[in-house]
Image 1 (cartoon, rainbow, N blue to C red):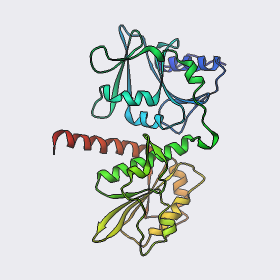
Image 2: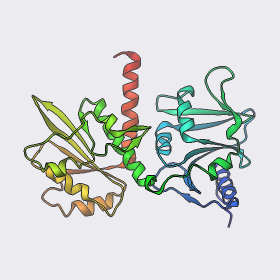
Image 3: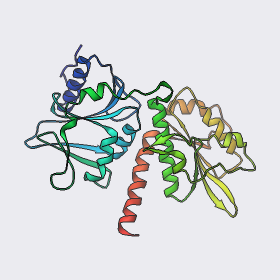
Image 4: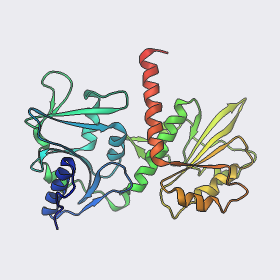
Length: 311
């Protein structure tokens, strides 16, 4: 059954028409609820959907680089820009769009201002600089993306887990900590997490089980003489049924200065789990995974501003 226009905004109606058209190609369509953005599994692809009503000469879209990073890290990622009609859609691989972002203007909050002209070319900085029309109504590529081997497939949850680890590493690096992550081979922005962490191996601590310590998702350390002292520990828990990270961080309980954070999307589940650690539950803090993206954006913006003004 097709989606109706009842109570839908113009943007929502355009998106609904686009999704109905995908179904006409016999493609499965499913909203990805883990992400805040309007992103869907369409067939074997993952598609961020943006819509703009008919304009006089151009179509305007706003897209934050935080969202682009999250989409580009998925398997077979695309961005669909609906230009006034489901019959006029620019369907571009997200990683190609990501490479062109430096040529698209953005504000201090990382919001890119994407303009698409009446001929459905994406407008870049510089005169007559465009991403050509090869991506107009590019359903063939969207519905027949490269085949990914079963063992190499990446779930949305695993992808977001890697993204949150990367952002925590970047924030720690900006703040001057030594950072460690055990998942060295995971990829984000076409870089392995081991290339972002500043420590190749986890420092050994006198009052901690090293087997547990080195498995904590992200650790921040400070130098104290010739030793590393833990300051912050983070566990990313996106699966509400698995909270082993809380137990792993318990190995740091003897270090009273260490802040222990659980990054998750279910505060109620966090409360249930932490209440079983009554003698330690005041040591753990909950942060919604969405807020890590906000903090990461603020830290990166602050870093860029400091570089720009030289202060």
